[in-house]
Amino acid sequence: MNVENEKWIAAIASADYVKNGMLVGLGSGSTAAFMIAELGKRVAGGLIMKGIPSSDATAKLAKQAGISLISLDDAGTMDINIDGADEFDPKFQLIKGGGGALLREKILAHNSRFNIIIADSGKKVDGLGKFKLPVETIPFATEIIISELHNMDLKPQLRMKNNEVYKTDENNCIIDVDIFKKDDLQELNNHLIQIPRCGGNRTFLNLYGYCFNGAREQGCYL
Image 1 (cartoon, rainbow, N blue to C red):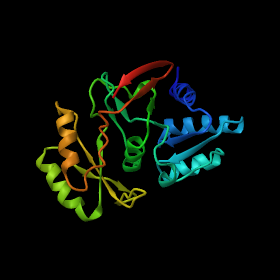
Image 2 (image 1 turned 90 degrees about the vertical axis):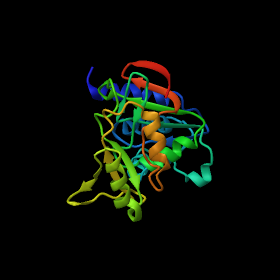
Image 3 (image 1 turned 180 degrees about the vertical axis):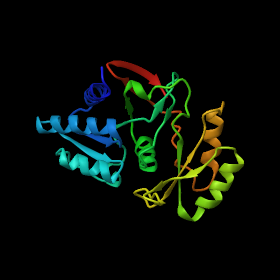
Image 4 (image 1 turned 90 degrees about the horizontal axis):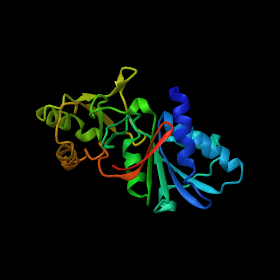
């Protein structure tokens, strides 16, 4: 089975959880795009729902798919949030946020009653860290945070795009760090969260939900 088919299977399986009247957090990334397309088909077929997008790009896709959108302020607590992942390990720990929407994604996940993570089999790794961990920072604090991350031996790299500093939808910066040989990810996660204006990292260790790995559905604690 190719990756595109796996993404569609994951998208369809996650969309089955969306019922009439639900408020749905819409994640970002390539797999989430399949989910948005699937929900658009169901809305065209009569499904009544409203989406809360995690990025400007997601909002654009959702509008093109015919999904009605509302703000997080208007939604309050969402019924369900569906998002992708950059990596997941055998314990269903995740790295997310490679596309740059990590802070909004984390806020949606926190404000949802139930979270679903969808991923193709190529995202499965034996240990997290082959994909760099994104950390979102405000411009004011970015350079000092880079210094602190250097002291933690995380090999921080300020993300660039077209020879300019990459900016998120919130106009923040992203620092990509190397956690591949770090043993205690929970301790590292807690340390990163405690750094002022460095709370957007996406190790995503303690989220309850489901991971759809291709055709195989697995319930998991994340």
